[in-house]
Every structure is written in structure tokens, then in C-alpha cells.
Length: 444
Ligand code: NDP
Ligand code: 2IT
Image (tube, rainbow, N blue to C red; front, top):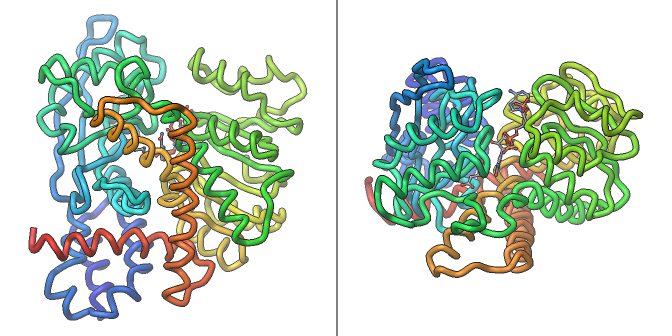
């Protein structure tokens, strides 16, 4: 058995009941095979892959809080500090009832390579809670966030671990957590990113993941001789990533016609009404059933279905494994030319394989959605120099970073004889810097 196969088998055996973590291990380690096989004996002796797949530290804690009826509620909080070879741990916090250690390990593992691809000095981490912010009052969310940070503050810090947002964690939650961190530590430091503009946040961080996804998609399409202008785009999700992907798609002359939430999806043949979407989701925190009130000619459907709409480009921006093999077959049958992942691991392994076999231009999450964390790192830089850059300055840097990622993953795929396989390209290009840093720092 090869070293890579041995480690894949061992990780699955050691981490039972964590299917999402197994999925990323399968994808990433398979891609790294050609790199590892160039010097297999050395890496095996160093237990390089065993160290890479074992988080440096995992913290799990109780989060008690009091709801508006005076009832005490208890949730679980987590932080997975996966790899700090190239910088302090960096990665989002997810608040969603589905959160468990396996999902956070998948997200943390992906984050190692994503953060490396940005070219900035940030290691990989992820955290969150099974708390569901949906339907909670602002004061309930605040009490939860304060209790969450009352434990988390011991484990994070501007030079140690810098969390940010993810599903269920946006500006409101970051604000409440920042306030509590400051109160507990008496330090005004860059311990979280995605902060509000009045207290150290970066311009363009809100837009960064969605905008970055489109900068990436445009560059990847260009590399393949395709112009994004005039293309029809299907988007899933209606949160932070989806909203600003839709905004930037319009700015590039493309037409986004769908969005979704966990209850249903919208098809608006005239193009999604961005202002309506923002009002429904960002202001009213409501459901997409409201969309028809703004656009009577649009369609609302219960359940899942965005991928059945005929279009040129598909951008999954909701959650993991939302695009399966059947969806991939529908996309190919409908003539889609590209799929670029705004969410983390939204395509199943089978779907990814099918899309690649059918010559769809496929931009994997850890490259395509790296604009969010890249801009978080730019927020850290601004905080460190106690200055704020203009929107244009940050946006220009973001665009440059995404174009650079496209060039690097393309070059890595070519170097290993896998031209056009951007999954392999992203995993290899992300891994190399981490490998170099881990080797240099000895057995830690
Ligand atoms: P938000 O919480 O802002 O939005 C999430 C969206 O996805 C909502 O529309 C939500 O619907 C939908 N969704 C969430 N879970 C499910 C589910 N199980 N089934 C169907 N729909 C679901 O999160 P973000 O936009 O920030 O995150 C979206 C994705 O992008 C995630 O995979 C995240 O990890 C990834 N990402 C986020 C970055 C960021 O900077 N925010 C950076 C890089 C990646 P509903 O409201 O009904 O739950
Ligand atoms: O998945 C991700 O890259 C994020 N949720 C953003 C992380 C960050 O630190 O900005």
C-alpha cells in the first residue's frame, strides 16, 4: 500500500462518523499523490501527512445563555486550530444547528490550503457552534455571542488565532463577540475580522468573498477563451457570499437568475433584483418567500432546484454537498460551461469528477472563495499599521490576489501533467508552501 493510501485509511479509521472530513481527506490527499510520490520515503519517515491531517489543537466548550423567556439554553462551542505553519490560525466561525467537530475539521483542513493560496501569512482554523441564530432576538444573539467569547477568548488573539464570519455569523455577531473580547482582555486588537467599519473593519470585506469569486471566475474563463459578459448565471444561497456574487456578476455584464435558501429557491428570468434580495435578507432577515412581493413575475419553488435552470455558469454559494451527481448531470445536459464554488465543498466528489470528465471548467472552493479570507488578512494588515485603506485599494488588491490564484493553480496543474485540472492544481499549489514551512520548522 502506498503511503498516501495508508494515511487515508488511517485517518478514516481514527475519525469515525466524520463523513465531510473523510471527503476532503480523499480529495486533497489524492491530489497530493504525485507530490508525495516524488520523495515518499522521506515524507513517510517525517510522518508528514499524519501531522498534516491531525489538528494542532481542538477546543470544545459549553456555551450557556439565557433566552428571552428566562430559560437557560446550552450549546456547544468549538475551535479547531488545524495548522499554523505559515501564520496564525485563520478561518471563520459557523453558527448552524448542523455544526459538529467533523464539519469543522473538514472546513479547517480546507482552510489550510485556501489560506496558503492567497499568498498571505495565515494558517488554517475553523470554529463555531450548533447555535441557530434564526428566529432569535438581537438580545438573545448578543447573550449567546458574549457567552461564546467568554470561553473562546482564552484560545485566540491577534498573533495566535483570528476568527471571522461564516454561515450564521455576520457583522452583528462579530460586533458582539468583539465587544466581549475587548471587555475581557482590555485589548483593542485584531482578534476578529469582518468587523464594522467604525471599529477596525476593512472596506470591501463584506463584499470580498462574492466579488472574489467573480474575479476568479472571470479570470479562469478567460484562461479557457471564454468571456463572462453576457452569460447567464445560476447562484444558490442568499447569504453573504451569494449576494455579493450576484452584485459583481451584474457589474461584469452577466445575468444572475436564481438564488435560494434552505426552504426554497427563486427563478427570476429578468435577473435577480439585488436591492430586493438585500432588503429581504440583510435588513429584514426574512425568507425568500418574500421575493415574489417585489417581483410578481418571478417563480418561487419549495425545496431544492436551482441547478435545473438552464444557464452558462453555476455558482454554488450555500453549503457543503449541495450539488450532487444528478445535479452535475443536469448541468452538463443543459450546456453549462463553468462551475465555480463560492461555498466550501459544495460539490460532492462524484459531481466534481463528472463535471471534470465532461470538460466543464471547474473552479474548486479553496481557490474560488479565497477572496474572503484574503481580505480578512488585509484587514489584519490595516489593523497592524493602524490605518484604513480605501475601498478601491482593497478591491484592487483582492482582484490581483484572485487573478494570481488562477495563474498559480493553472501552473501547478500543468507542472504535474494535469492541465485543466484545477482541483489538483489548487491542492498542490496550496500544499507546497505549507510543506516547505513544515519541513523547515522541524517535528512540531
Ligand atoms: P450566510 O449565513 O450568509 O448564508 C448562507 C446561505 O446558505 C443562506 O442562504 C442559507 O439559507 C444557505 N444555507 C445554509 N445552510 C444550508 C443548508 N444546509 N441547506 C441549504 N441552504 C443552506 O453564509 P455565507 O454566505 O457566509 O456562507 C455560504 C458558504 O460560503 C458557506 O459554505 C461558507 O463556508 C462559504 N464561505 C463563506 C465565506 C465568507 O466570507 N462569509 C468565505 C468563504 C466561504 P438559510 O438562511 O435558509 O439557512
Ligand atoms: O471559509 C472561509 O474562508 C471563511 N469563512 C472566511 C474566513 C476568514 O477568516 O475571513
